[in-house]
Image 1: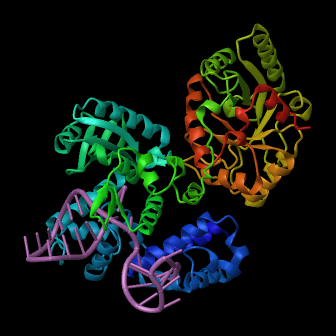
Image 2: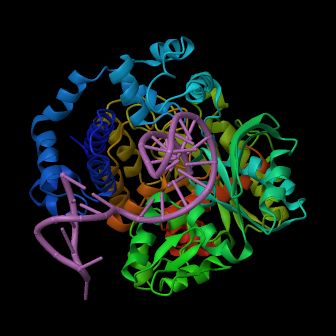
Image 3: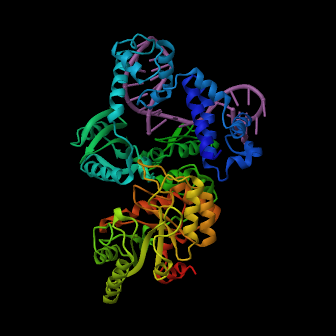
Length: 574
DNA sequence: GCCGTTTTCGGCCCGACTGTTTTCAGTCG
């Protein structure tokens, strides 16, 4: 029973309790406990005796968790499952429909799934219930309609593209004084549901009207004096956008409020409470003086609570407030610290530019070095290189380095880790490379033990420097393969292997939480690479840096910040 | 169910918006 499984059971319990009309705070307590387990450094199984020490876990939840650990199930949950129709929780996914509504519909009209709900709404059975009316009924029908074709979560780079198009529009509205991105996109979360902006203006109604009339708008979800919610279509990318309208005096507190995360905001409010104050998007209210303090800048808002500026990427309730209080926030890595990309493909395999073009593009970014790492021979779909082709490529690299392009090109390869953990090139070839990346591209379905052993075996090869995209996930498309990350991190530590943070917005692998864990518990160093398949691919580095920051990484944790000499030293593994 | 520099009871983050209501409940972020 791992932490993830325990989290899933606790959350299911919370969902079902909520649906059966249970006290909302009780539900919240289980959700909070689930969160604590999720963020726990050690496997919960190993600390069964001291569960009550964890914040948010008391006697009740502790015994629930113990039951899960010992029996693998939870009687309370099984009971709720018996009482409630199995498809009822699915209805929670409908926008605008919450647990209270679902519970009432179930109790009064015996609605148990989406089909029955649609039928009841169409037959106008819902409007007669107390607290319901024709509009609510209509909303339910629309929610079901939109459910299948509403905007889904988007990859970060897609959301960024939409955001920048909308930002340009906002910049054209005369009454707007200041614009800032907020919400999860400002925190660089790996996928984005909708885009938040905070805008300063003295004419909110006028501004709201102009925003609602932008050419990209395909739906107006809501429009008030403080907020416009729209759905936009930017070159086929459909996303929800919320624009919050405040005065420039309120901008600082509003920006913090709408940047979140939700959990971070709760901690901020609790902190304000210690001073006897109340925090809202409009400022900090002091009941003693009946005054609301306002803040033009976010930093001033934090300062009022005796906190330094906390970078948005850290605002996730992972200990950042505690560290900020002590003045011990990490000095997060920045884009300007980055000296070169160590994972790039060319025309030799499945890239779309030549070695020279890739090198010159890297130079144009201000890089000092770049590693060419095309695929290895068995990966036929990506035109992996035979041994002979590798030698050909090296001749070209030698030639270019001799010509002197103003950037050093390193000889490398992204070598497949075969199903049994052996590598796709002989050691004789690997040992001549400046750096060797190893990665899994096949046989994703292996069980955890096999997969873990497979990757560790590759790390044990004396010539392997880097494991690329270590968990193999594809965001919004494919879960990571089964692998024991603790064993992986331990092996990386013992063999001196660097784990990659793959910056491609479909991957971002390792993710933020694993980076933090690997750094804090195993003291690992990392490499951030874009896995560029074209010159434009280098641009994704911003997502790699942002994810590293979310993982609390500093300059010293990332070998791409090293000078060429320092880099060569750490790559000379043996 | 959790928690305590307001400490073992009575709170639990706060406000906007919507739809149902003549004062509020549900949902969302």
